[in-house]
Every structure is written in C-alpha cells, then in structure tokens.
Image 1 (spheres, rainbow, N blue to C red):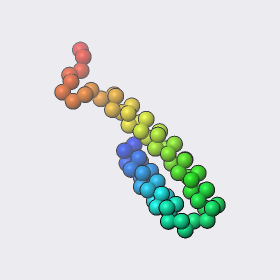
Image 2: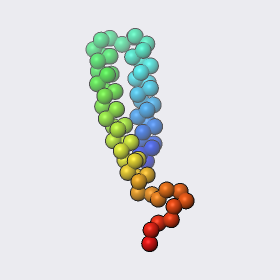
Image 3: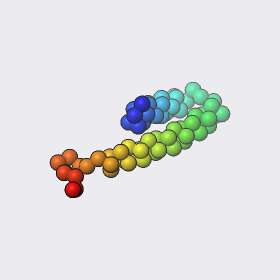
Image 4: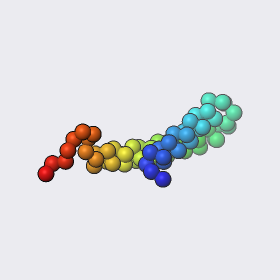
Length: 68
C-alpha cells in the first residue's frame, strides 16, 4: 500500500469518526476514546504526508532535466 493509499484510508477513518461524534449518540467515555483515536490518526496522517513530500522531492520537477 502506498503512502497516498494509507493517507486516503486515514482520512476515511477520520471522516467516520467525525460523523459518530457529531451524531451525539456516543457516551462521554466513548467520545473521549474516539477523540484519542483521532489524535493518533492525525499523527499517522502527518507521517504519511511527510513521506509523500520526501517522495516528491526525490523526483525532478516535470520538464526539468537532471543535472549532468
């Protein structure tokens, strides 16, 4: 699975969590646990974004020839 695919999966999980939190159907304890899970997912998303940025920097810009 690529970094972009992992990032898409994290985004989907965060969106589902947001829907559950907005619904108001969770108990306070469940909502608190969900917020902690979201914080963990945000950390994972940051790591995936960092990986994507490193991948982009290793490739020459479109239309640019590599230096000899």
